[in-house]
Length: 360
Image (cartoon, rainbow, N blue to C red; front, side, top):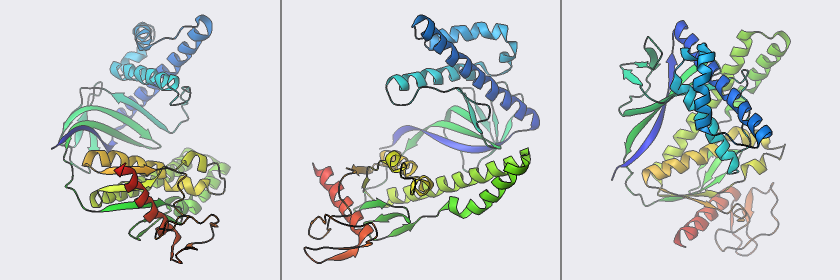
């Protein structure tokens, strides 16, 4: 049975100079609206102890556009979508999901605005409201579904469009194979089958080049050097994301049940000796990819308790070794005298514990 769901497809766009100017206007106006009404909400609350909502801001925006006519040069629905984003940010804050909304800086290299409707695709060109000419898009994969909305993003020096579509997802056929994953730094992860998936270390590979460009920029400044630095960071981020997408898709296709630890990544980042390495591997993004792909394709993802002693427990007899140094890479059981690679032993224990949780 097919599952109806919304999927997002991201493409690079190649606007002309005139289209770039209009995109920048949209980005600037949306940032202005966000900051203006965030300040307005804070002011009203401090003075009158009242909380404004989306409808209050939307009424005020209609009047503001009469005073500031340049706001009419951009898509009005994009400005309204910005107000909805601000309202959602407040809702998440009151639910204690995120911190209080912040003002948006023009120095932030990543900017975006939403286009809620009236998006057309013809060949390799897209049409948006307020844009007289069609924008060229790099369709690296076909777009065959009904378009719901879109978001244009400026990521450092490139422009992208993320298109949300109504799609039908067909669950994968069941397989008689389960896997446990032990996430690590030296190897990205170790499976209960004994496979060690290497950590590509994209940041470390480019680090010398980054240091060189950063050093030159700190001495001379200049837009060209800054753009080069931004492109290097963007390249690293895209390489990491591509690797995580391919690995998560492979694991989802090959296994029915996937078990891993519910790691406290935020807490682990406080260890300054490991923070850089933990940030580089992208565990949180990897788990997010596994989560939604498992839901799409009819797989089961199980997260075991982060305090479960997977490394200290013997996979053969279940004996728990109280003292186990991090430097000991081979697990020697004091009870049954079994010897096994420490990480493979942990992955096997994670699979066992995950399957136990599934049966409960």
